Image (cartoon, one colour):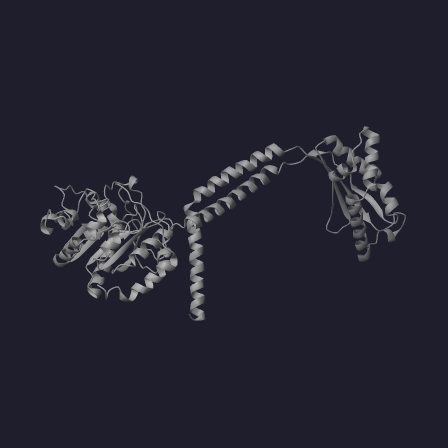
Length: 507
């Protein structure tokens, strides 16, 4: 790969990874909000529990290197070196108060004489906060204590005794009180804001970490780019999710105008691609499958068949999901007796006897509404192969609704009779490992994977390259499947490489 191509690829991958992360967080916004509320409330409660009233008093000193005994204009004239020297004296005064013992000892003695109480030097030093103004000549001493009287007492002790200390330590400097001690006042309580804000931020960070880590562990399919970039399967169409509970739609079929134009146009788009594929490659038999149940593959199969039939083509829809047949329920068809694949394979009916024509759909059906014993054996029989070949001869298009490929082997068996496979993947309903397992299984068959219909896309955050948007229901809850473990990624890649060249030649 050329350097420029590699750089562009890495840039695209980085952008895709960033968008996928945003997608994950957008989908889980409610988790972030809950964590914010919980930890913000915790911070507020903690601020109330730990809060104690604090009283502050402040005294301000002016420091000058000019000796107070100097008279005349010389005492008023201040050079740059004088200002620097004054700043150094003020800074030394600050350090002695914060770290020395002499100044605190004087304060301790004064308070004991006036109140009769003895306070430890370390405790008194912690009450003092010394700061310098930017020019370094003004010294602010703030006394903060839970005891209002003590705060006033310490401030007054500083006022009454500072000369005793400064005259001894800085004999040539001039210390004057710029502002007398202020009466002790209750400090504004900022702990509510600080603790609550800290709780909110912590909640957001923790929620984001949990959501991202959980998504990494579960590896849920969240974007059509996952299918396209990771597995090299093209996206035939993207179908966004809608809430059918809020609409008057009983069945999400293109024959019902209530589903909306976007939904109908989506399957017209798919129809156009199938017609183009038939012209280019001669394909007419398409197997539709997915990774797991509840991904909407049956509804997808039905609408593909209906879309082809509406264009005037002769189309047969075969329900090859013998474990959980659902085409009849999806189309709202009532059967007059069993007339599916099993009845033909077992010799109970001929192909012509089993096929049912539904005039309102202009569609031929080979379906059943009952589960079949040993479905894999039935689908792997010569009779099933003969059914597909008979359908191929008599119809322009054959659409086969298969069981999920990542759950049972049935889909791979049926795919060997088809010309191509249409893979349905639903956002947020399946993991990437399940998708990989299903695709790796399908790659071992004789059929091409034509592309993927990406279903249930979030309309608020559609994947890039989106087509018409709509939605449809999931896989019908009848019976059940057992799930298999996913193959390793290397196995999928090797199967993809091995089958890409000889898949059609082996038909």
